[in-house]
Image (cartoon, rainbow, N blue to C red; front, side, top):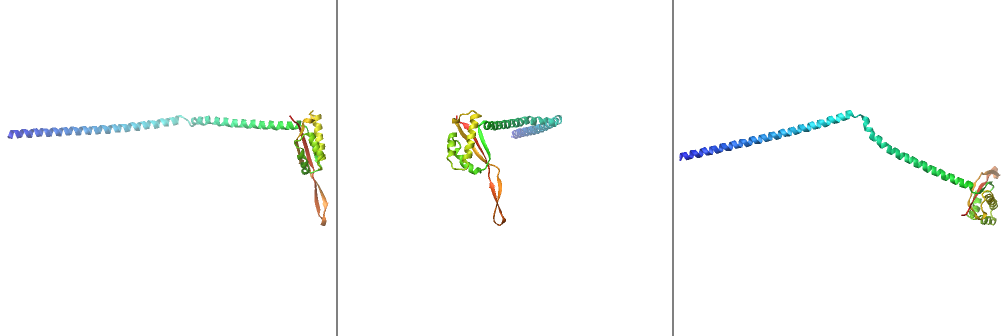
Length: 223
């Protein structure tokens, strides 16, 4: 019995020692694993630091190697587009101005070639003449003369005489047909005003204004 118990104690002691040695081995493995992980982490940190240092050095080299004038070409490249737009706008403005000038010149030339007659400094106010003028605007020449003959106004004989002068200019100078002629434009503008004085009571003097007017008639042919 004692021999069997001694064997049991020996086997148990061996088992405990084996367990202890296994535990020590596992602890050693764990420590080595943690050490290797820590070493890897330190190496990765060092690698990142070196990469950042390389980037900073490359940036510094680029800034030192490239002068400040190198950045200008982008702005210089952007300017021509703006200049092209400005030049196009200027060209459009010049073309519009040329067109307006051409239109004005054409209208002036048409007015110059159109048969007309003017009476300047007529001894009647433009207000009184406009009452008669409005009746013949746009009418045929013969109809206008008939209207002027039968209008009992002071301006009608002056306008009739002026209209006959315009008809004569159209027939003799521009070789136009009287049957096709009509009054295209008629207007009366205010001329110079003569100022006179009329004696009044108590040594006063009242102003008398003698108005004048400029009457113009322009004729055209109907198509």
